[in-house]
Length: 208
Image 1 (tube, helix red, strand yellow):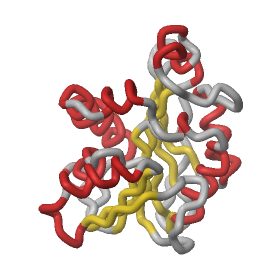
Image 2: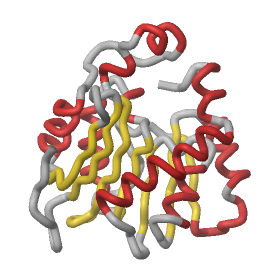
Image 3: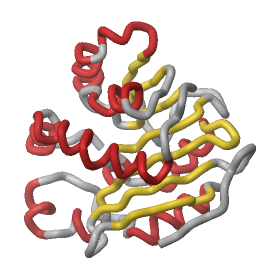
Image 4: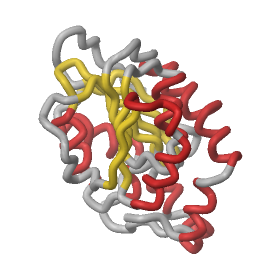
């Protein structure tokens, strides 16, 4: 679902960008490490901060960013114009990703799938477009957060079919992933996850 005006404002400010760079990216890097080249997809790319992190911090050679909101895609295009053909952007739905099977070395989710009513289908699509051995880096807001009264009153989130920390892990496993590491916050309001599509070089599973 497209963000309401309040959340869109919250996602388009320097504080959010700093949080994404200095907390979310660091935790995901600690779980999964850098890419060292290759093709990446960011689902729900927003205004392009995550795409820049994928290129400059994780070391992707090329990144594709998709978002349900065409206005956010436009903003991302302006922000990322200097990267040239290393960046590709378009409006699209994560439950129906318009890419070929096994197209990407990594997929990044900076807090998007909790906005998706059928998040299980989104996970299946992420799995489909990853190459064997491809990596899935995800940071997610969990059910306890989105049901917290002040959040529920101000931000628009689907209320049915929501997921907690263990639900998200089970959802990834059902989609076919091997979950290699995870870090829930105290109280399980947020979680960080690293998983791989089975294939060459896949490591053993770790759960917390």
